Length: 224
Length: 220
Image (cartoon, rainbow over all chains, first blue to last red; front, side, top):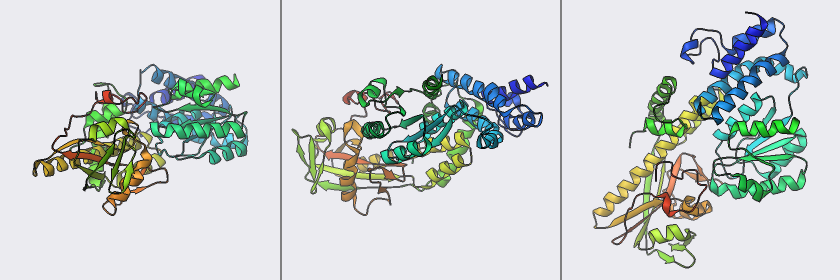
């Protein structure tokens, strides 16, 4: 297997969710090396971490995100792919920290105050990270001050607000307005089951994503 | 307690019927069993008499507390002679387990456990609803659907009044400052009781919360 085949194999592992050799999923790749072993091998062979990130992981997660948007795969497959990506990403983390591999920017995400739901927010965080962004996840029940503090500390390009409940959408509105008042240059994207494009306009947010791939497309448009 | 429906979990995962991988269905079966062993269900209800409905304001005054029910829930309950306030929870064990799995990188498994916890909590609410119905039938009374703060634009903040009336009969469920329940996998609400009320089943058609997460989820 040459280097380009190896990168293609890592891409395949992430696309189909083959985490490591022991992973039982997907059944047709049982017993084969997964994203974990192959990424380690790629680095040992001298393939640049940036190549692994750009030519395997980001491409794989683009495919996964698009399949999800097209309803060709569903949440479970997406989560399994994200797990495989994380297994690969773990080998790349030291290169992010040393600055050898640059990411597209910093994206802060959190579920708004009053709302304790985090699954959708976690999915977006994983897919955005897989698209080459550094993700700072503030968790759930996050108030405006916590968002603003993190935006200022991290000098982030964009912030994502998530809400699952219709009843917490109003909190999203006040948090969005406070963020915009104190950090006017940060791009604000919103998402969650009850949230709509119309609501984005009402609260003065910059972007609305109906799914994780929508968030990636919006964020990538900021750095295109 | 009602069994957790594998099909409901598959639907909650967003998978169309018949399209779930074996790997996913095997995990659902496995974690339903584990969650049943882990869960510590608790449920109960208290009955308050002499409810006073303000139709113009769409409020309910009950035992010194005012509930801002909104016009839909007020209309559904206003013929009630008594009101049952209920609470049900599957305990904190299932949600803690979900968090543990997610923290360990087992996101899918953690998500499945989270959904099973929600299903168990909803089943506990169904159980207590049935218990109220049986108890009231014994004294010749009927009951309404159950309604929870957050339904049909009834403000979640009214959980505070509901929990004050439940008092110590709260199954150790507490409220956050934003009136969400801990453990999260809990359900609270009210049920109307009387001779002229009916349990009409659930229908999204009575509610105008177009963006509700649960809208038509179960073909309401």
